[in-house]
Image (cartoon, rainbow, N blue to C red; front, side, top):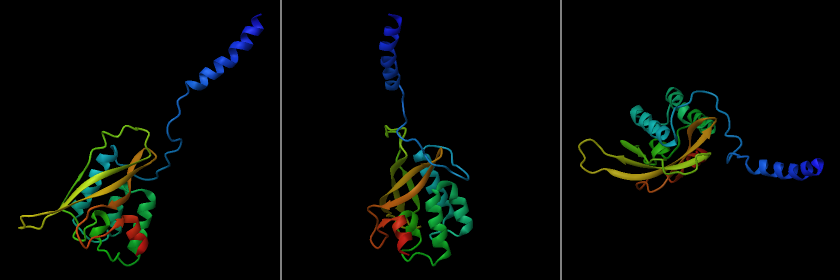
Length: 182
């Protein structure tokens, strides 16, 4: 009698234990070697744009500036930028690489990621409101881009930038497409 009860309960117990096991949405979030910037995807993206604006250059970053940007960039994107740095600068105007506008940007504001419900997400696209205003000019050019943030290990990093409604004569497509074509 006891053996029959155990034999009947054991499969049921195993089935129930399988139902209560919680698996994350992803098993491997990749590895990251090197420095990591603290924060969620939106704060890391904002810090990236703040640093890029602080650097002030609209040219393709040299190796020193790329080294400063490395903690903010995915490993594949960083390698593509290093490769572009060793070749001639992309023809679209290097300011366009990170902003989509050949003149660059004078301000950037990254949208909050707080409304994204999936905390297990491996990649998150975020809108970035950009503007460019010349000194002494009363009007500013404004446009949006979308920055793709991905996880490498426990770090959020920039993996690509999609140029959305950029000003005329600016880059179109994505940052990676610009790097690929040059």
